[in-house]
Length: 173
Image (cartoon, rainbow, N blue to C red):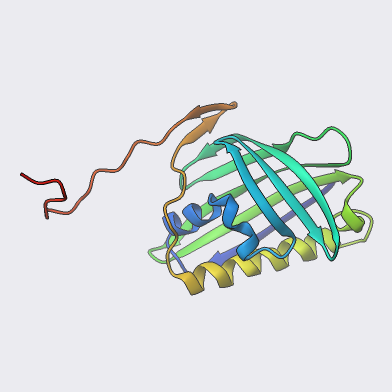
C-alpha cells in the first residue's frame, strides 16, 4: 500500500469546506480523476475514477463521519484497487480552513496512477486538493452538505437546524 498525506488551506469557513466536501456527487466538478459518484446510502457510494479513456468503478464505505471534523472511509472492493483514507477539517479562523487528506492505496491501480510510479500518488492528491481549493474559493459557499454522523458503520441522521431569522416563514397565520 502507498500512503499519501497532503494538506491545503482554503479561504472559506470550516462549515463551507466540510459541506462542499461531503457533496460527493459534485466531485467531478473539481476533481479531474473523478468522473462520477453515486451516493447509494449515507454510508456507501460508488465512484468512477479514471484518466483518458480508462475508467474504474470503486465502492466505498464511510466508517466514521463527524460534521465539521472528519470522515474516514474504506474501499469495499477486495480485488483490484484497494483504498482507505480520511479527510480532516480544522478551522484556522473565521474564513480559513485546513483540509488534510490521508489515503492508503494499493493493488492493481488504474494506469499505475497511485502505485508503481514514484511520487505519482502524492502529485495527484496535491493537484486534486488544489482543484478543490480553487473551486470552493471561487464558489464562496457550499450548498447544504449531509450533517449526519457515522460511527462504526452506524448512521445517525443530522438534526434539522432551526432558523435563526426573526422573520416568520411560510406558512404563517
